[in-house]
Picture (tube, rainbow, N blue to C red):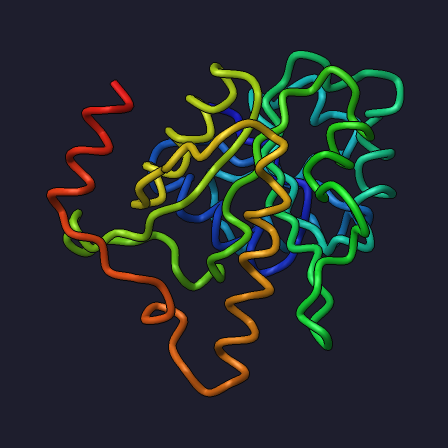
Length: 221
């Protein structure tokens, strides 16, 4: 699969490396072409630096891995306002949390819903904003793999995003439609607050009995 990665930072590089290792072809683009070339070189020979406008034509999936403040400009370079991404799966990895207050920057709704409005016709899935790039790829026991909550409105896009999470070694968990994205994004702020208090957020949520998980899965079916 040709995975377009909009972004040139550590998260973009780490995701690109893991997906290249899984057999995908990362296409890296950003506002600065030399930085995109540098990111592609860091990923490896499977990756290619491309112009932002080429992503809409060549990518099968677009992954947005830029700082929230730069997302509108970055998407405009892809041609989203003209509907260039209509019908494409767009995975929004942005983390729109104020690192000082740990509060969500959008006053209402979610970053993912704003991205959907910026990219009319794209099938937006919120995913991968909670885990640092260093989490991937995960190569340990399957039962201990990170659970990546994802949400979106298009079943095909959710399937593609779930497959990409699995290729990273994670376990995808579909938690609802795109209106659920604000809750997922606020979870990042919660994690930051727990860390700031000197505790591991892993222990800040209840450990659920496996029997209850099995019952919930049966009910969902």
